Amino acid sequence: MDITGSSDDRLYLRTWREEDAPALVEAAHESVASVGPWLPWCRADYGLDDALAWIAHCQTGWASGDHFAFPVFEANSGRLLGATGLSQHNRLHRSANLGYWVRESCQRRGVAVAAARRVARFGFSQLGLVRIEIVILPDNLASHGVARSLGAKFEAVARQKLWVDGRARDAAVYGWIPRDLD
Image 1 (cartoon, rainbow, N blue to C red):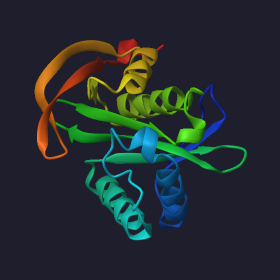
Image 2 (cartoon, rainbow, N blue to C red; image 1 turned 45 degrees about the vertical axis):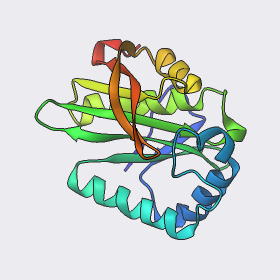
Image 3 (spheres, one colour; image 1 turned 90 degrees about the vertical axis):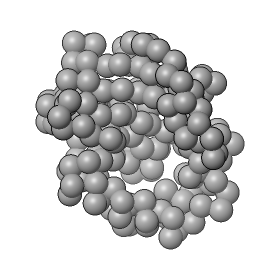
Image 4 (cartoon, rainbow, N blue to C red; image 1 turned 90 degrees about the horizontal axis):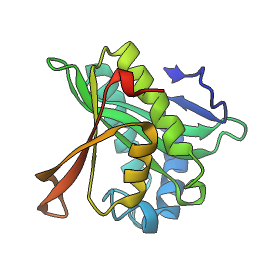
């Protein structure tokens, strides 16, 4: 599945494919300093087997309806810029979590905002979600900026919300509902 038809035609989003693995490894290696502190998978020893395992996980997530991950490509060049997706899909409460990351050389160019907005539209219109949460470590200032730019509303700092580096961490929770989309 791909997501097309946005006011931002710089980007192309679709489901992960095995042939994306080398580009994912390259983007991870480039981004260890800026993405790694927030996403532990992004590390210097991230390899092809890791990328293939992630892609298989994403394909299984689509099949089960639990996880909807999208690589984000530059439309003109086909270069992998990052990824975004919906996870922790709660069918009963019609909600999911939104995540995003952008490779270091492409950060601060509006890529995360444009891609995440497109995925949110997919979640609200195709999955019937009524709520999307963005859960961020308090000191991840770049992700807070993206959440605010998207129009998500800061709701709380949830105590011990995330398990990171072997310990419970507090996290900021932003809520996003369909009427928050511009």
